[in-house]
Image (tube, rainbow, N blue to C red; front, side, top):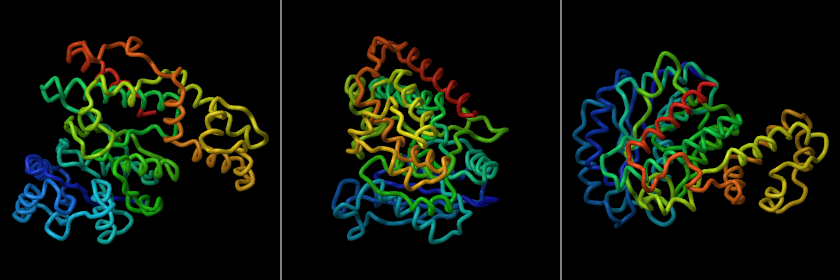
Length: 380
């Protein structure tokens, strides 16, 4: 577990001809030079993006000033087929290639081609993981820049504020699942990746499930080590509409503000207080059943009335039992619990801004306020 001295940067590419030269130049400007770039150019066999991907492959073949490994899952006969397709599989292929070429002390950095980052980004990232050598992963701070098009900036700000509001509440209650999972904002050492059994490729959400596995098996870093400024070094992914995955930033922006209310509501502090009260009850549950705010939901969700006795039977020490309870009531269960209780949803009129009608500078100021609060809580 450390010291870490080299970084492997993993980037899936699908029709990214406009962004690829920008990505390469950002890497050329890095103050830390001990890294290798891994690119997986991919698309479904016979699907859209083929011609643009061929141009990406041609561009990459001309790169001579960066350590580069190119994985071609785009050319004829090499594209995805069947259920094995999408960005989840591209990331899995990239991480497996990195695993095959490096030892356990290698640091893998997950990026996207549309993401901007500071020239000291890799340097600060490696310093942070070396300052926390036993941590499983780094949930890197992020910040979507405004693009100047209201049709994109308004839903982007609505979605990002939803994510930040949710994370702030998790940080406030001290949840072990207080992280935001963006594919462009994750870094981890290979020993931790192997310990959790790697990434599970899905059509969407694979980055969340990977981070959740890291949280269950270790601790997460969520703030850059000193003396680095987290606002300055936050990765800056584009806020663009996309239908490549079923949920996340791209699909949310494509829906627009009105279309987000059902899927991405703001939740009240009371809902998170109920989660905290449940977690606070775990030590007492080692001795006997205690009703928690989440118990009715968990009995229905898990299909059992005996929530805790099987865990007592398997974990004879209180600390192990408490950890197993936290694994059962994980980040997904917390979100499902909040979604299942309409009383925990804040209506648009209860929010400090009107995402449908307030001017973009007002919404951006609210986003910046949440970002500043988040950076303070991340340091705790």
